[in-house]
Length: 480
Image (cartoon, rainbow, N blue to C red; front, side, top):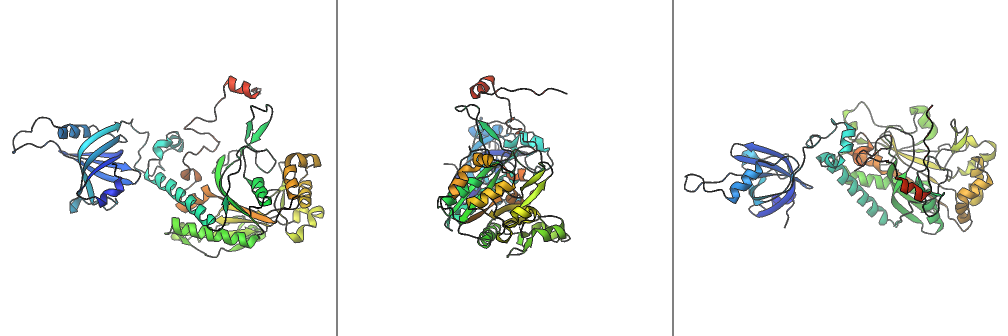
């Protein structure tokens, strides 16, 4: 039965069977050393040549000699299986950098499970020196490096901790649809054509916003989800067309309760995932939007002391509140929602919606970490008349409102409770906790800044047969 590399420290003197990848092979005279890597770490294998009997000439080629000769052919990233005995290393040959550094395996049997071509880059480094396009084209190799394995495992552990934390507090995990309806909420939707209903389209969700509000109308009261979200945005540096967020919603709540919950969650994650880092304020500071813009010229200020070298290990959380409900879009030449059209105005500002909408403040809050927005939420509108007024202020006609949001307004007329929630961008959160420069370093298979998957070569053209089934014809734009 297979033994994992990390387990050999408990099996001194025992015979084991190991499987993994060749990280390094070193020939030292008549001894060959191989560093074997599996998901738990690296251990040293020792291959000795054929021994002679009675000090004379070597005996005929034995299995021992054959696998020793085979060991001399091993190359980086070959997949092998070995059997052998776990021994203690000599004191002067202990490797303190490895968890298994006090032990080695004297190999008695070797099987090559698969050979490998020479990798496109060195896997023993952290990978920052390699062109990102080359790394993404060969992502299955890039993910073998220790740093990337660490990142994905921390992300996995973080997701597990989030689910346990919220389940223990009465939240129910609900998966909402990926194929939904296209509605004007902010960024462009990714559209999915329907084969059975030609000429009509689904939209991939920018967020589960309307579904989670409908779950509150349904009486679920506490919902959460690790949600995949999709936004067809123009190229914008450290963004991805698809991303992961923690999405949650609560009924009969207020800003204070939601913010307190998130503070507890983030402190819990920091303690469990990166205990070596320091949270500067266990009670997160709060700042209104106006103060942030006047003092820092940013709605996501970084509160760390930049002059201190140790600030790389610091985690500075901050709540930014009291955002404007609406802002003027130069592109659309009209007022648009600062967050989204379901955000509740400050109660004392509601009467200004008709007379002075630009001065209305939102019951919204963003959570900032080290100068990056890692989440945002709000108390939602739960009454149909106020929601209809909001759509009117945004310039939607009654016909457009009914076509796009009639289902939501109808639900609000069936006893919708007051509710609110928040979404945390998990890609960004994990990248900051790990000290990574961008979110691509914590995604297994990221896309380029312009939305291309270099590994799978997507997006790609559809066949004529596929397009015909969907009732779609591609027309090439005329060259100017």
